[in-house]
Length: 200
Length: 318
Image 1 (cartoon, one colour):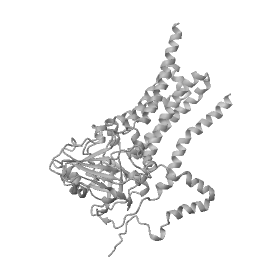
Image 2 (image 1 turned 180 degrees about the horizontal axis):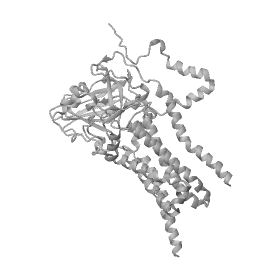
Image 3 (image 1 turned 60 degrees about the vertical axis):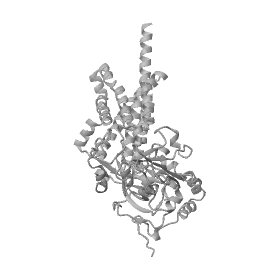
Image 4 (image 1 turned 45 degrees about the horizontal axis):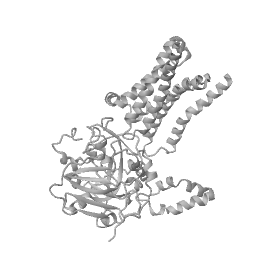
């Protein structure tokens, strides 16, 4: 089994790198349209959100299928979420603001969608740092779990960030928000069922 | 004497390959496979070849900028035209054959004027001296282009209608036809798209009715067959595919003001000091350039238009 998991992990790793590979390829071959910087910034942001959502899909999958092995992939997927979020952030800092600290600060303070995106990114940092086995042990399972509940807040904030930056047609961010609500709703639902069955 | 003006984008005669030949060459090389591939992706092909008839004898204009032109490819594939979808790529994919050339395109000019009328587009442009005007275009989203428009001053049409003393504003309306404009099947905006100008803005010599770009007929995705171009205002003021021009006494309610009055004002002059509530307007990305540019007051047309707004609080009347 362990052997299978290891090779599956390799596969997931490679698949997770495909969006980045495609973006680099498209950038180099001029396939991203007239405003490639905007396209790459937007796409890496959307991929960060997608990876956040995939990590949130692990628990429901586990519960619904009874296959516990899904959890073995969660850390890697979470780290990919942070990776895409970092690229997204760096593109904003570098190619949108050209590392103009004053402008960036004004943006964070004055533009709610930037503020919210920035907070989501900052909140991902402690989750990334505490992702190692060593940190998990040091924190203890309970505290570690509590800290990682932050991902629920992060997914909502990320959807909000997306929703607020879209000019008029909110369909796409609303689809993501709907998925986020489903993922969080599943937890509320299973929590309630558990406490109900405990009571009876 | 007939003088042919040399345009900066003109390709030397020696380098021009007939478009048909270009297509045939691919078919020739690839045989049947080439044919199959070409028929499978007609849109991407159509987008790259300049379409439409070329205009003859375009007059140059002193208002033209000498800045580097944005490529034809970018101008015709990166479009905000919600009537054909809300992303940038949909209009070029869906508006290739817009408008249906078998139907006449009529433009109604009415409202507070002595000589209202209906104009057939083809007749209208025959009566006008077409100019080439190379203008900067600044989108409210923070990007910009340099576009060589073909057109004539809006004032020419307005004067003919002889507006009366009640005519304080001009309202423009885009075609409403969900059959031809699939984006109108969703109520992203309250269709039809409407825009407006104050009378003095509308009569200003910079204000253009554009009927083409890069020396050719207007592509569908850019607002065929006839659109407004107001270069000192954000791009959404430059309404596309116009069917009605109406003189009115009250400030018209435009589609974007109706959608979100807190973010989009009636004037919407390009102004680096008045930010969009959600993003800064201080800088812009010129399409095709890597670094951002500083956005200029009135998009760099302050010498021509600043006096229209003297004494006005532009933070309030944004």
